[in-house]
Figure 1: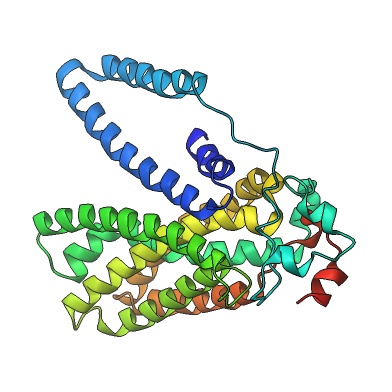
Figure 2: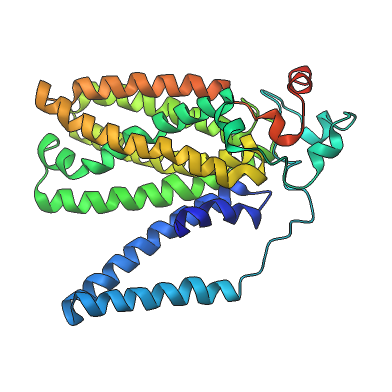
Amino acid sequence: PSFLSAIIHLQFWLPKNPALASSIGMAFGGLGSVVMAMMIEICIQKYGIGASFKVLALTLFGLQVGGGLFLKMPDLSTSHAKDLLVSHRSKLDASVRFAKSKDTEAFKSGLGMELRSGEILSSWQFALFWISAFTGVGPGYAIFANLATLFNKNLRMSKAQASTWVVLVNLIATLVGRLPTGYLADRWNQSQRKLFGSGCRSMFLLYHSTQTVCLAIFAFVEVRNTYLSLILIVMLACVFGGCNVLIAALSRELFAPINSSVVYGLILTATAASSLIFPNAMPALYKMTGNDFAYTVGAAIVSCAGALCCILLQPLPQAYGISPSLLEANS
């Protein structure tokens, strides 16, 4: 819970770079998990399980509670919402488009309009976001859950080679998939060349499209070309890392900063569902058919459906205090 909370709340310290804040939280969270795993393994070997848990508890207490005492709260006196809402396919800054609108004050004030969970769940914007999140990370979960098997059996690597590549793919997904995604999405948000309303939404669509193409190619080359298959696996891992960053950033962008924690908690049901369905569907279909062709083609079709949802993604007007008719008039 503390990890997930940190990812979404880091955005309040970098309101103009929310995707970068999420990518930093996720990337260093992954680095921390590696360091802590190594530390615990060493402690278990030297001092036993009981002492290791005590060391872990004291370390976490020192980092979280001790660090929280010196944490400086973010500045919430200025608007965090005015730079987020950009109408669908708009190439103009939101503050310019709505400068003469009667809803300007509501739009510019603070963190947006707080909504109940029922209002968020009943909106078609959340339904599209849920589907796109589900399809965006599902194939990546399947890849990571079955990575050793893919390398060992499908690509015919030795166990030592497979273990090395598992570590490398995880590292590449963190450094190449997560960190650059946040930076690029924020730079794209600040430009005037937005394909689908914002840099985050445009990159989300781009990642879905890349994933669909990679899965479609992988279905036909997995057995025939080991090197190309390896490149496609790395690309899918990077897409997985990038989509996780964008989901956190879009929770803030689509539903206003004040609702970002609630939305992120709700949207994690999509990622949780995908982490159960996709990793289990992959070996199940392999046992039925003797190869990954059926799964990969099915995953490509599902990913394509997610890309269509990305095209339709729009901010929830009520979250920004703007009427739907005004949003449509300015689109």
